[in-house]
Image 1 (cartoon, rainbow, N blue to C red):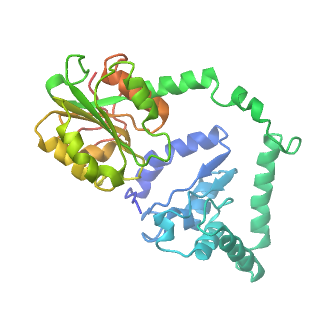
Image 2 (image 1 turned 90 degrees about the vertical axis):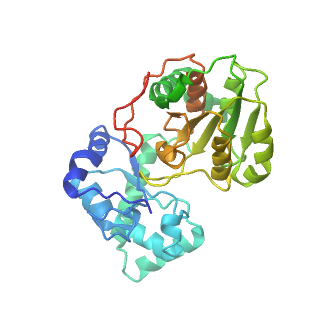
Length: 343
């Protein structure tokens, strides 16, 4: 588990602030994280399974009345320490209304039902969650229309207005943390190789990055490499005809200031690229702390997100097609303080 080591005063004045604002604005649902928060609960108990946090803080102290949904119960922060049934029962007792992605849904349901039957969970506790879920369905008219018209989805989702807003947010977030040798923006005369270190090829990671990249350069070598491909891809990457590298790393894994890196043998590949002595520009699509693992890069840019608009924004920023105005919302120990950012 990641650990939030803040004391209660720090939690009150920093971490709880956005939650208070969201609740005051009427947010409908809040997802729990499998975090260790020693100031509020025993270190070995994930927040998702903590009555002191879900009920004591979120419900009673912050006054949240909406739906509490757990993060995926199949994640290591839960699955490595608790059985499916135990985790499900603990989450409900803690205050969760929805149990997300247990490894065995039937076992999760059976465990909760058994806990109700033996009196460990009060029926009123289940009924309270049901009322919240039904109220949410009524709010979006599911009591009137149970079916989704697929032909109308595009009228609501991915509208031009929403896309434009997402693009603007992504562009505003791009932060240039380090730029030794003024490598950014890239020049068309520079022979640059692009390495996309994606978490897997099963999704769409890197698709928009590559598509946008081709709008600026057509013949540059581009490698899209998943963790299990790193070792076999290394010779080709190192032999590519280039004077410098842009390495874009998709890093959605959680991490709090500690060691954050890419999966599989990708770290070895990146270190090999750095070891060539050729300049490396590292772009983090996701967790900004990854630069701590690779201090040898000459330039470092963070987007704080793995979504497609961030891929587009990163490429445009690299080529100077959009201004870079972001400031770090966190400190990166040993690298850059809070609020820093090069324009």
